[in-house]
Image 1 (cartoon, rainbow, N blue to C red):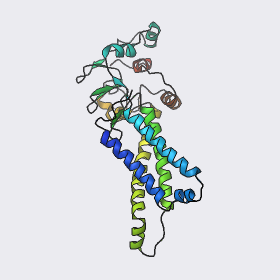
Image 2: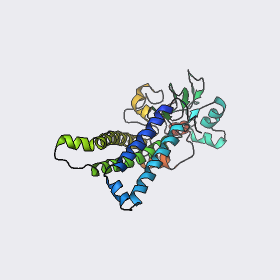
Image 3: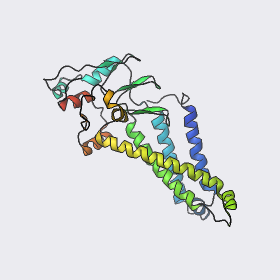
Image 4: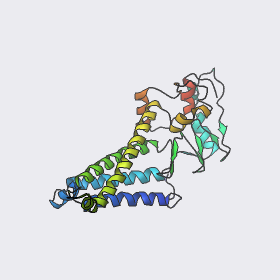
Length: 270
């Protein structure tokens, strides 16, 4: 389920953890509301903030090290894709042709629908969304919901940290003295502000795409994808309505055979 911690993303993960705890330490060392409450013995909010930071770090490692849904072998993936029970065949209209799976030219496995080969990970990934350099891992079928949850928790931490940084700025008679007093805190606040905007845009875009039951790869490259290029601009064969899309993404843990969904919509075969 998890990859080697000391893989190619070790430096990225280490930098993320160091940056997270350095900024947290800066917030506690300066005259922010966190430090004021800690000094007065009101530990509820400081402890809650540290716990939330810890949860965000744990989610980061979970998403970073988790198998995103690698396609490993033909045998198990053919059973997964086509189904081994007879009743599953009833989901595919009898008027359609047989499902033709494309064989990957890199890892030579047969790709289920919505999968794509990642040049960085050197694997085909089910329901491929994108390869994220931040987590140094692909975002795919198995870790996509955890990636969105991580973004949500990280955004709360960043916005809270930005508010705490703002509360720690002290007044000074001149700009030079103000920068000398608040320079480190200002730098931390600037980093947090940039990261907050980045995470906000990422979370908003992913929630939008999830509500449509499409992926970043499908949204950006639909003109090059065999099962989508014949569809209209606003046509999505996997869209089952906003509520069902969100429910299926966040609450349905059973793997989906996308060939069944695709052909059930009455689309032409690939």
